[in-house]
Amino acid sequence: MRDAASTSPGSTPRTSCTPTSTKTKTNSHSATTAMAPCVSAAAPATTAVAGPIGFVGLIVPHACRFAFGPDHRVLIPAVVLAGGAFLVLCDTLARTIIAPQQLPVGAITAMIGAPVFLYQLHRLRK
Image (tube, rainbow, N blue to C red; front, top):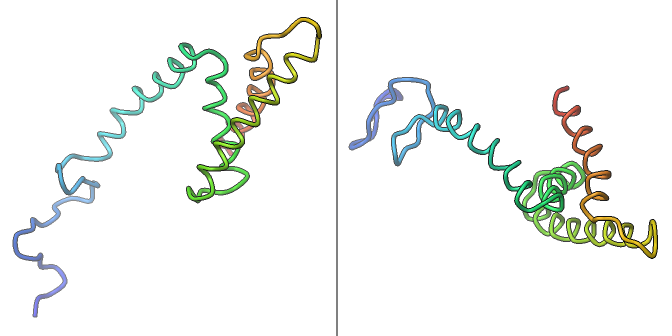
């Protein structure tokens, strides 16, 4: 019988407490640190290309996670339905606020989404 410190045949003992990927043997902390600037640049770039309506894709999932919790079985359908409903609501407001003229839908999404984003950012800092 083996003691708790031994390893199974064919496996290598862990020499540090640094989390590593078992398949690629890469340090996951350094990979996360390297990817953070890329992801941080990709989110605003996506919004810049897609326009302010793309902002919905950043806000609605976080709002749904706050409302429904982290369970993806509930979260994914909720995000799909809430994102579509949010855009329909914004489009309706954009068409009726100063009828017969129309506001850009992006202006409505920004007016609603920016305060929600700031609230979520403030809540995250606590």
